[in-house]
Structures are given as structure tokens and as C-alpha cells.
Length: 268
Ligand code: ATP
Ligand code: MG
Image (cartoon, rainbow, N blue to C red):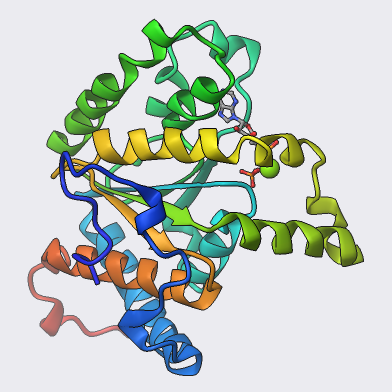
């Protein structure tokens, strides 16, 4: 699983070749998939506690997607039951005037994980080569330098002990239509509907192209991108859970040594 959806460094990505409805690794078996996700979730709970207890490593997850792609669903489902004390979510919205007065990584670096922490980026510094590129918010000469800058920034984080995983939740335009329609039709979902999302939807091809550039240029050994088939929510959650658990297991973390002589202690 870890391999299947990972973008190799310098791999040229054409998103039309990546099936957003793919469920092959689980043969389309939703029920079995959900059971597997629940098991992985238990594993994640334990691994998060170990990460926190060891207090050495830092873990950064980046979530990017088109509107309705499921970033919020991933945060809710994959991290269900994980101790909230060790997991933080950082959401990146339109920059404030203060943020805009600084370089684009300023607001990002401040909220990267500390030792023992997992931080989830709900959107990220990649917006600065996505929405910013699509809407020409800065000249091309400025955004085109950012791919290398981002690679250098992430390399620095990695060299200082951060494990970085980046997930692009890949849906197609029809699926987005259904999900937007549901936000219109279901009163409980109305609050999620933003008419501005329709303007972004109209720029679908431009966004796909901007994502292709991101995936082709910023997937590195120290901060790989994964293209997650996200039309099926259960499969999306399963694949991300699996990659996350495999990666955390691979860190070979250890609980810190116990105090000397615990076996002789008698509590009266
Ligand atoms: P989401 O859409 O992530 O689920 P939301 O609907 O709660 O979150 P939005 O108001 O849509 O909140 O916030 C995200 C918006 O901020 C997006 O349109 C995104 O493109 C924009 N944004 C994020 N970073 C930047 C940036 N660096 N420059 C310009 N716009 C940005
Ligand atoms: Mg939104």
C-alpha cells in the first residue's frame, strides 16, 4: 500500500491516469475495508502514545485536495480515538494581512510539530503554488521558484527529525458535483456550502494542472506525496491509515527506560 500510491521523486504525474475510484487493494470490499481501518486505528492509538512517550520524533501530515475532497473526513476518521493531546491540526485559510506581510513559509514554520507531536496540515504551504498560481496572486516568476524552496524547507525539517507524509485526496469532477449537491440538499450540510466553491470548480482543469506540477516536482525521498483514491471515502481512510501506521512502525520507537528499581517499590 505504502508503495502503490507513492509518487516517486521526479515522477511525471498525469492525474487522468490515476483512478480516483480505485479500490483494488481491497477488492472493493467496503465492509472488510472498514474492519481493517478500525484495526489500524487501534494501532495508531498505540503508536501515537509511543511517539509521545519517546518524545524524540516529530510527524507532519499534509492534506491537500479540491473542495469536498475529504480532508475533514480524514481527520475525523483516521484519528478517531487517538489522544487529542498529542495531535494538532493546523488549518491554512486565506492569509491575514500580517501573514501576507511575511514570506509564505513564515506562518507554516511556526506550527510544524515539536518532539513527540503529530501535526496535521489541513491545507498547507502548497496553497502558495496552487490557489496562488491558478489566480495569479503573485507573478509567475515568484511562484515558480517556490517548488525548490518548498523542497529545501521540507528537507530541513526532515534532517531535524520530522517525518513528513503528504496526501493528495484525489476525487473527480463528478464526485465533487455529488458532494456539493448534497450540501445543498441536506439541511444539516447547508453550512458547508460556500458559493465561492463553484468559482473554483469552474477552474478544475487549471487546478489539476497546478496539482500535477506539485506532485511531479515536490515528491522527495524525505517528504513523499501519495495520491489517494478518494471517491470512496472508506477506501481513502483505509489507505491513509495503512500508510501512516506502516510509517510509524518503521520508526522503531521505544518507550523511555523505566526508573531503576521499580520492581522493589511497595506502595503502602
Ligand atoms: P476547506 O475548504 O479547507 O475545507 P473551509 O471551507 O472551512 O476549509 P475556506 O474559507 O474554504 O474554509 O478556507 C480555505 C480557503 O483559503 C481556500 O479557498 C484556500 O485556497 C484559501 N487559501 C489557503 N491558503 C491560501 C494562500 N496562501 N493564499 C490564498 N488563499 C489561500
Ligand atoms: Mg472551503
